[in-house]
Length: 165
Image (cartoon, rainbow, N blue to C red):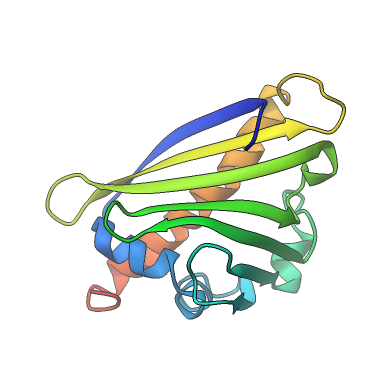
């Protein structure tokens, strides 16, 4: 589907894969665990393939230099509850979106011992101008936003061990 460039990054988390998965698949959980980042998360559909998610950032989050506006919309391409893989196509938003023809994100949560996991991220993109990869700084910013959200969720879940258990 996406031809072009790929960014990958692993993120070790001190939370089980199942708990991270529960948050990743719930709009209400995103709002709760990332208080101050999202004002709302609306899902059109059942959360499975074809569903469209609209994330509305808080005014403070939207004003951050790394934000690409106040709304991010994406379509679920794959949601595999057995393998804990979530793959989305970004339809609107992202700071570098104006440079990209397409952007697909994927996260897979892999257990890594008792109460821990590794979030394996992949971002595939194709530039509008047909050019090569984004600069190293732009790539780091693009993947960094996803990693930062995972760390915010991790912090919340560690502080609230019975939530999403």
